[in-house]
Length: 326
Image (cartoon, rainbow, N blue to C red; front, side):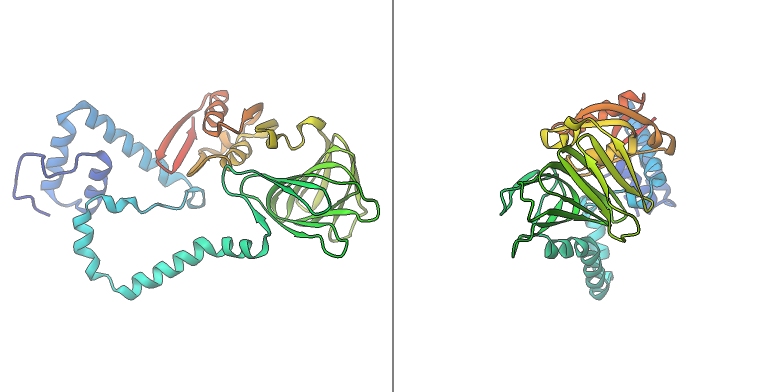
């Protein structure tokens, strides 16, 4: 690329990220390198911005792809003319195939969930469902359930996320929740179910009693009373105690962590931010265990508080990625 040897910077990039893109594309053009050095030396703020971009780009390379949010195509705002010149050279068939494949990857699982679910919630959204039998289900953000209340049945299938159930007493028609490989049954109580994956589910009881049965029927049901919880993990069902008042506390806007990994707490906060991705960088930091109470109504502030407790810092790597790092 040539700029006719001009020594002014009027027609060149003004931001460090734009220079980063241009230098990668024109790394052998001495005119580009010369003007970049002029821009960088023109103002200490430019040099500081460049150093921050280089550090950020290096960090992003180290973050696993699956941890990154779906990229928003705002890169086209940089050097639009360059892309406009290149676009006609790209076959429309390739573009169409790529677009279709991308759409299927991005919305395929979501469409399947929508077909199955009777009710869903989005980010930051909680929803109270008044069920046909007088029971109540409160859905956490990014959760989904399917209901079966026909012919005297009282069945709920938790397809995704977490739900707090307040069950109307009816001994003749047990209330059951299917979540992954567990079936939870009760006749009148308040309990919470969190589906983390098909093979990992947590059940906590605030009031009353529930029966927790692994669907393989390889072992007898486990009975949980108020203040007890069970977690299916690695094909085993583990039980422990919990403060009854902390069961389903998320429905009141609070997250209570007891000796939990930082990454696990961050994953919960993720459901309560309006957009983007929270990421904890570094295996040691991700594994650090914390105890505390965090406001779900202010998830970004809670993420910063979580970082402060580990003497870590938080910065926005991109508008869609917030990173905690030492």
